[in-house]
Image (cartoon, rainbow, N blue to C red; front, side, top):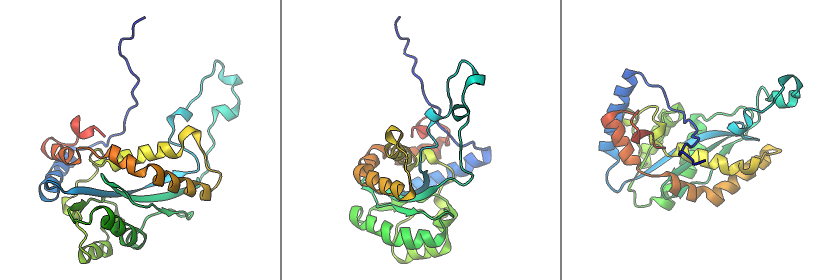
Length: 248
């Protein structure tokens, strides 16, 4: 029997937008493109993501096959989960030239506040990354709109220390499709939990994250950065729901 070319595709998540959202996004995307994404200017972005001892996002573990549900053991039918699962928060900054060393918060109360962001991420790590990969100063730092990222103390410090960053008024909200760091996270997660790998402790998970970032981080950055500027321009002209804007 000949194949008819039907291929299974996994659905990707995409934000739901109101008409008002689309107007705001288009306006800010155009400002971002025209004011900051100038020719030859490298895009630098950062983000944070939770990682647990095992890959709970793996869709392959979301179901099971059975011919008789009554005979299926509880260990197969039910997926156990702690009320407060053990996890860490990983922050990193990337560009088409590579990635920074990671910053990891490992406490039970996991969050990124303005003090963490400024003193543990921006001052030591972002500045180190910019000196190493963008010493020519021809870059634009594009954070997302998390409250810690635009806290007054953070903005003041970046202004005083000559960090070229996208001001909040030019930063389009809720456009993960324009931010290749979202794809970077997906690839990094696949590498960390490759082959069904699970950590037995927080320390083992942290060692694994550091190892994978050192081994694969730069290559993942090169694979994920592509057409950022043209996608932002597309969003500004036609909105965030076009096919090209949703390529990531």
